[in-house]
Amino acid sequence: MSQWKQIQQLDVGMLEHVDHLYDHTFPMEVRQGLADWIETQDWEAAEHNESLAAMLFTNLLDQLERSCAQEHNFLQRHNLKLINQQLQVKYISSPGLIAHVISSCLQEERRILSTACMQQQGPMEMSPHN
Amino acid sequence: MSQWKQIQQLDVGMLEHVDHLYDHTFPMEVRQGLADWIETQDWEAAEHNESLAAMLFTNLLDQLERSCAQEHNFLQRHNLKLINQQLQVKYISSPGLIAHVISSCLQEERRILSTACMQQQGPMEMSPHN
Image (cartoon, rainbow over all chains, first blue to last red; front, side, top):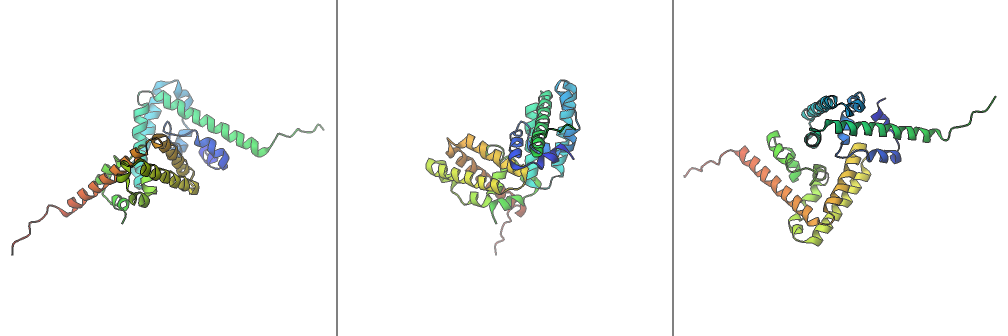
């Protein structure tokens, strides 16, 4: 199951932590729309490799543009168009920065999932000595 | 038929003009989600009447909050929450400004609809003298 699918199964309290990760710096539409692709790219390496970051960013914009062209709903298409323009303005001259943002979001999601998992399991039981 | 419903029936070329009206200044989610209510308020009067503007703005935020509470989709709920916060930051000390923005958007929509209508009818025919 993708990380994003696991995130969506969290309870409301935990989802609020996820809420805080996403705004115009990295919109949740992009995280959700390109979930599988995002999770299979090496954003951590791209943080320190400008040409890899530029390639990933171009690829991300291309995919957003394709999603936009295929979208029939006027409001969704408008949002995707707006997001594409805003990301270009914000990151075109510093793609390493969006790599850092995405890498941090994915890492923070993993931290939230791990906290939720530990809360579900309860405090670790001491294994009895036999 | 509400103005917003008429807008959505425009062809793609005309819809692009509508696209340019909406961004974070006044998000299209709000225009669409509260379409009927927005069209029945006097935003033009509120531009020059700060207490009317403040009342309309509070009402708008209340309705956004209710929509948010009723929304089951995580992404949509996240977007509504974000929009509510952003509008508060932007307009809480100057509600007359959002009244002006909304009034201008509605007026511009009417101009677009009227242009589309005239294009559909073609050049006005001269009525023959009997």
